[in-house]
Amino acid sequence: MSSFPLAAQLRAGLTAHSFLRAVSDIWSGWQRYTLWGTMGFQDIRQRYRRSVIGPFWLTISMGIMVGALGFLYGTIFKQEMHDYLPYLCAGFVIWGLISNLVLEGTGAFIVGEGLIKQLAAPLSVHVYRVAWSNLIIFFHNIWIFFIVALWYGKNPGWVVLLSIPALVVVVINGVWMGLLFGLLSARFRDIPQIVASVVQVMFFVTPIIWRPDMLPGRAFILDLNPFYYLVQLIRAPLLGHVPDARIWFGVLLITVAGWGVALLFYTVYRWRLAYWV
Amino acid sequence: MASIDLRNVSVAFPIYDASSRSLKKSLLPGTTGGRIGVGADHVSIVKALDDVTLSLRHGDRVGLVGHNGAGKTTLLRVLAGIYEPGAGAVEVQGHVAPLFDIALGMDPEATGYDNIFLRGLFLGLTRKQVRARVDEIAEFTELGDFLNLPIRTYSAGMRMRLAFAVSTSIEPDILLLDEGIGAGDAAFLEKANRRLAEFTDKAGIIVLASHSEGLIKTMCKSAVLFERGQVIAVGQTSHILEVYRDRSHK
Image (cartoon, rainbow over all chains, first blue to last red):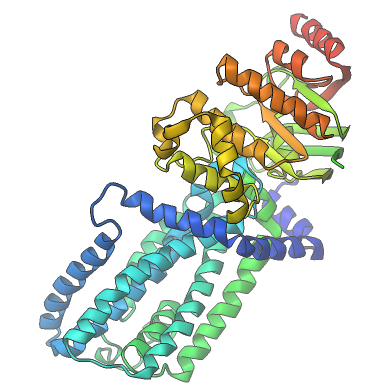
């Protein structure tokens, strides 16, 4: 055992062999989709067990939230409701997905401790489970947006279909976040707290309740904010626009860089996870 | 054909939440537990397995004996592929079914049937395969209508029945048991033992960690004695149990 185990493991663990094992863990985890699919569904069922309308509480509470915030901020910012409410609603629902992917991603392996120590299955299963259950929640919430859009007679047109590949890309990003933050959080239990407070701030920094054009000049607040790119990628087509090329490019950069870092850490430290949880 | 080969396997746990300063810098002597050392960065390190070399072949029924914390459970988890050792090589051929702490890995709010599915999927079965076996599993548990109730209403013995029935129904080549199947009642134990006997006849391997001499004697032909993460002796069950008793009373 060297003086800095983590650094020593980094040197020793960065081999082609462990890289292949990390990739095969991620791939064979994906192939166990019936397993994490069932687990994801059960997570949601469990939360609403014995409740009469069950997961539709998600839809209702999101609707109440968006309605209240919409009228409050719409008035403060002196916005036209028929434009502002669909904008806020789309942003809010997408933010819910992305922030939960990050927040629950930090707990992916910690929550799965019992199973990790019981049964040898690919560890990535626990990350897919988080991604899947949040996708289910998203599909409950997005109805609020469609109801609001319908109410105000907004028709985004065929462009709306672009939000499907955008959603896939965002969830792919959610998986690397779960792998990376889940791994780090299993070892350093302060990380979930740090991530939670950062995400909380990012909600206000990211244009969700405000619009980019309310910001004087194009500030670094937008350009350097990865959440902005991810939110905008799905929101733009929902509102009937094709996302700018720079949004696509930004998301591509986030995806490649994020997966790169996550794979690096997963290669080196994956085998330690069972010891950490 | 099932086989297990361990060569010079070592497993060390870093303990981050223990106050390192309260532990002596040197290795602590003592017969209970693994060796506790302190790394240079003040992380306590427990050597749970220390240079273990072991080889098991099909038809073997091996008992692991030793004090609390001697490394028995850690060894089982290494065999299950849960812990990858820090040093040494592990080669396991065959499908492994671990049967450890039964309370873990079950969803207490889900019904018995749901848990049969979940556990089956976790053990590597497809939905279809679980569905094909679910009747047989339900019959073996003898839980009847209880399978439609949430697991939280079950007693420890009922949970054991469920976990045991699912784990053995996948026809594994290697079965790993921690503390046996103690929670079952007499009738179930007899039934379970019959199934285990059938299982070893089919050239599987059973590894059982237990403190119960009686259980080890009835189930295992050979035994391995662990002490502080090291293999002290391997051999006939009765012989090893004698050695264990002698060393304990010293």
